[in-house]
Length: 289
Image (cartoon, rainbow, N blue to C red; front, side, top):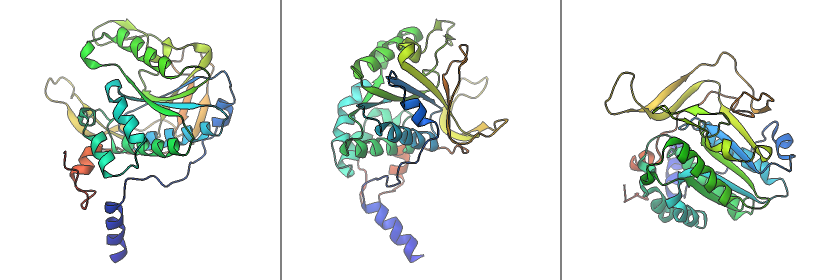
């Protein structure tokens, strides 16, 4: 019991950190051996603990290649300077406060989860160690009121501007944006997702899939116009479980070039600021929440 309390106290007085070594991803070497690859898009289900962590492992695998790597995250472009400041910081309380005080971290669609924040901390360390060159945000400004087709194309333009030359951009985004085939929006418009605007010969898209489980997000109940219900929601159980690794496919009609199988059941990851408000750092109160 004393040991457990000491562990909690130690965690409370230290900056958030990710000390686990990079875990290998089966199939990653084959993927990154393709020198013409310039954009790797990973389409996720927002709000899980395992997908951001596994995405970090994929970035680690890419860092073994002799290429400049930049990482894209689906955060507002207006937050880029705050992301840069966090990456350049020591990851301490002040840096966390400034980043988590941004309005984005109160938008609970799963992208502002604990796991997403821990991914940023992991990327901060990777950048410090020279494993990656930068991290960029690519969500267009929402106040522009873009229609689905315009939004996706603008997102792709931001991605291309952030990854010039022979840079390899590894991007985590919602799985709809990662598709390569035309979709229909809720208002009836047909549109091409973000990944479909990137050069096909230089782009690979992967659907990140777990073996069932749950994700933390906000969903509207069926036939309801009330406030969305936020929390852990079941993802159901797949007909078959798959081992961890990347599987590429050659089906022209498939919206993805393959699957990034996480290899386990997914667990929900609640909003990062919820953890902060619940005194995870009791000796370092996050005053802005």
